[in-house]
Image (cartoon, rainbow, N blue to C red; front, side, top):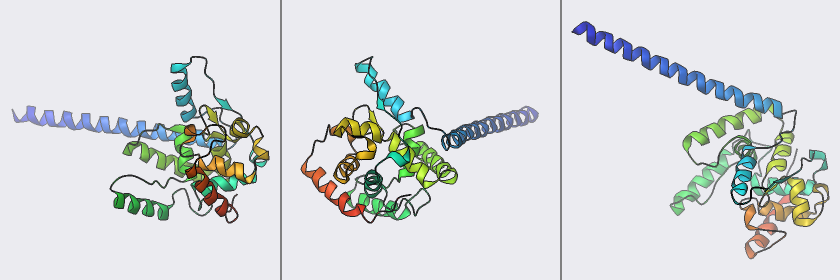
Length: 239
């Protein structure tokens, strides 16, 4: 009887170890896949992103022929005004941190605690890029952990210039509008290189909710936000 019980325990332990080993190998394989993609995209332009694919799928549920507006533009052919505006609006310490702005995280946590709900975030440009390129929009701890790992991969393998170049090319700037070139032409009828400081500030201001604002629309909130961004742009450093 004891031998049967002991044999059952041994079998259960072996099964557990096998399952755990399989899970660990699967996690490692997934991380290696992500890392290989990051290495590849350090030198080549992605055709699409996870976020773009999800938006296109959603648009085609209503209109099967829907297409996204997106056109890759090199960093050198993107207005310096837009680079400064985006950094000023989204990640003022972009050049100083290694993917995570711990000071901003502490400030956001304190603000959320005071309000009793989530009213502020502290995602850096690198974190947003990790999410846009690879992940879903879910808010689970598992997804946040994967985002942190990919952010580390991006910061370890890419220059700040490349990270910002990718971000500007895959940020959403309207319904089905992705990247600085498509955004500039859709909202203002100019190229990404020709954006003025005011136009750049407007595009940076709508980044948190880009589908709410169409073709240069303005509100009291946007005017105030643009004023803040314009005031900060001259002091912002870009790669």
